[in-house]
Length: 461
Image (cartoon, rainbow, N blue to C red):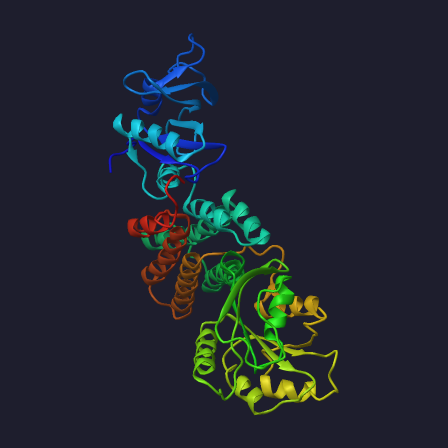
């Protein structure tokens, strides 16, 4: 790939619309645009217009025939998204006009941009760091307003600033240790207790970041949430109540749901990929049996389980079969149909069966009772209540893995200091921690990781 090579991509969805936007970036962008543009104002020269101005005219082919009436915006480096010259061509919306303009631009020497190449160039040219580049994609794909808010904060550099400060703190300790190694006669060594205290402060900062990692990823990706219970306890009714529409078929006949029904909803800011499953019981037919197997498979993949029981009928063998499936899971136990129950379920006994990791709430999905209590219980289970307002929420697995490596290396450095191991070994551990932090912002990340990140983007972004 040639540096500053001229690229082009469609910046809007292909189809009928008010406008379609073609974006060019790289060396010769303005010159190419000028060669195919006939301004409405005959005195206008596109090569000489001020940066960030919009100009009306026509795109013409080699014969001088008009292809489309357009607006062209010229943006000159370095005050652009990529820090290269950028030209945006605003065509009439529609497949044919934009395709004809695109073909002409390609004939003039531009090439189609790779997925995410505009944002990749912004990163490589130093306008944004890797966390900000990822935030662009997160903002586009946000599934809740909270997820969008986190992406916006990351886009403004909040994570990068926090990581850079932490990295500077580690670098200062590393510089002290290296000075003690290189100039033992000229540098007063830090006492062991001081070294341990400084490293421990850093360890605690990293640990605090990791506490927010799970929640950050939940806001970004959503929770795979599975409704599970025996037939006719109200799973489908609960799904319909949460969605606010009749999505799942509800009847008095047990076993109505035979296959998985999956929907996306946002509950108190938490995106839930919620799956309604077939009732768990000793099935009476082949189709229902297959549905039960699929329910069990979905349960294995669940981040959160909503286990539903009938508050009026008491606990029977089918309920215990459901309880057995909750081992090593986290979620909420729902005692449904409290509007018609006869106090058949004892809450304390139920808690002994399901364990402390499952808070118990009472609901009537049919009447809409308990929605707020369910939301609060879910927020508590996923740990929202344990996150302070000052916690920086890490929202990508890549960031989490890097922070876990930093924490591990700081652990090793503490062990080395406590054991009076050579300073060179301590320096290696601290250096590894510093390098791992650089992977988050892109300062020390391998090229293949960078390519993998930008491959997730659409063409034109």
